Image (tube, rainbow, N blue to C red; front, side, top):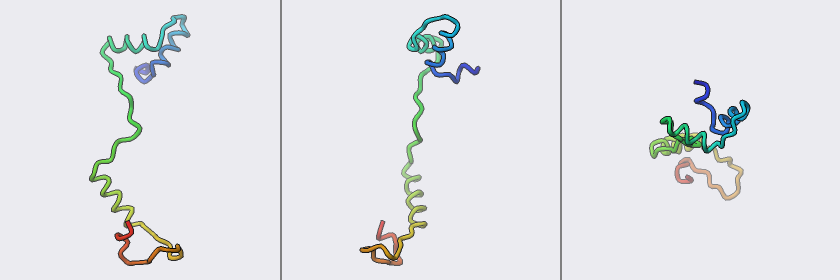
Length: 82
């Protein structure tokens, strides 16, 4: 089952090591014929609106504005600044 974790290019190179010359596209086609499906992994899951609200609330709770920044009016209500 280790071969299931290989990419098609890795499988192609393994075949070439034993003397079989195949294209990585051929490997993909044969895997498709066997019932396997190609899925490209997402880079990261998308945030739901609830996750976005929770994340924004978390960031606002930890917001620290240094008093020495010019042009920044210090208030107790930091939500007006965001």
